[in-house]
Image (cartoon, rainbow, N blue to C red; front, side, top):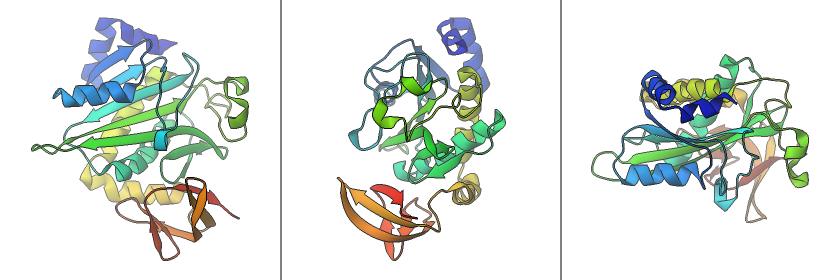
Length: 252
C-alpha cells in the first residue's frame, strides 16, 4: 500500500511541501486524533497525523472506529487558527471528502447529517472535530476515517448492512492520492469565502433533506418531522426544531 511510503523521510518531506503542512506518519497508533490534539497543545502549526492502523480509533459520541491494518485512510488534521465551530466544520468536511472522491473517479457520494459520507446508501467515511481556544484563534483537530480497501468480511456482522468501502462500491483508490486530494479540499472548505458554496453542495448531496426523519438521543426519540434544511452553523432544521446533536434516520 503506497501510504507506507510516508515512512520514508524524503517522501514525507516532499509531500509535506506539496500540501503545505507537516506530516507525521505512524504504522500503528492508538488514535491519530489524540496525537493531533497533543501536537496542538504543544503549539504545533498546521499538520496532519496519518496512520496505517489505529488501536483505539474514535467515532462520534464515544463510539469506536475499527478497521484492519492497511484498509483505511486514517488521519487527523490540525488547523490553526480554528476555521469554524467543530460541528460546522465536521459537516463541511463531508463536502471535502465527497469532492476528493469525485476527483478520484467517484462522483456519486452522498452526505448524511451530521458527519457521514455514504456510497450506495452505506457509510464509507466519517469525521470528528474537536476545538480548543486560546488568545490566537484557537486550534481545531479534524479526524477522518475512510473505508478504502475493505472486503465485506472485514466489517463486523452488525455493520455489514450499513457500512461499505470504496472497493466494495467499485472504486480502486490509492490512499496516498486520497490523502493529498482530501487535504487540499479541506483547506478549501476552511476558507470563509468558500463556506456558502460548500453548504449549498452539502444540501444537494444530502440524503435526509425533504424527508420525514426521527432524531434519537441515547436511543430515545426526541424529534420527528421533515428535515427542512441546515442552518449556517450546521444545525439540522427539523420542522420547527433546531437539532445540534443526535442520531437521525429517515422514516420514508
